[in-house]
Amino acid sequence: MVGVPIAMDGKPRVVGSLVEKEIKYLSDVISNPERPFVAILGGAKVSDKINVIDNLLAICDQILIGGAMAYTFALAAGGRVGGSLVEPDKVDLAKSLLGKGGDKLVLPVDSHCGDAFSADCNKQVFAAGEIPDEFQGLDIGPATAKKFGEIIRAAKTVVWNGPMGVFEMPPFDEGTKEVAQAIADGDSISIIGGGDSAAAIAQLGFENDVTHVSTGGGASLAMLEGKSFAAVDILDDATVTS
Image (cartoon, rainbow, N blue to C red; front, side, top):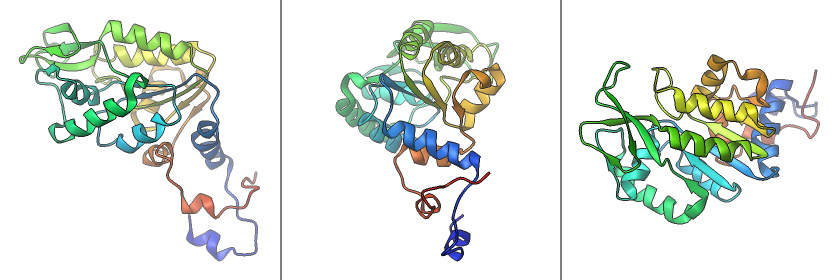
């Protein structure tokens, strides 16, 4: 990706249409978004999304936090998270992000929980920060899904990276399905940032209802972090060839 363009010094250095779309939607659109601009971040670990959150706080109107990473934020806010997946060593970092983000960071207000990590466990919805020790959070709750859906439907630019819960294991896929439906229902420029989010969109049949589904995986996260890419920086201004 870098060595070949360097060897092409003096000749046109371009990429194909797929990489052009990645650059357009993950870089150009985000640098000058239509507003409201909403980011939806899920997945397991705050540590995977630290730089993404930090970068997007400067340019987003709101960042919706779901997935297991929400429980680290709940712990940082003084809540009870039961046996939910958390990163104890990232609690102080979560506190600093909460302080920096203020109202921009939107956390779940409830959680769909189980007393075991299985589809046939005893299930119950608890308010955020009030999960008993014998339960673990496995998805955002219905009130959160409704709240997130309203914010998403009102947005003009949406970026989504990371599921809202254990979407591979019904019924803990409901939050992810609600978010996907809200994106599909809206009229925003919608960018799905690869990985599990792309898999969820495909699984739910919404691929044709969003603007762009990234195939970049980890590279899409790096672009959301605002990182530069040597393989992109070396390209000529007319970057695309058919």
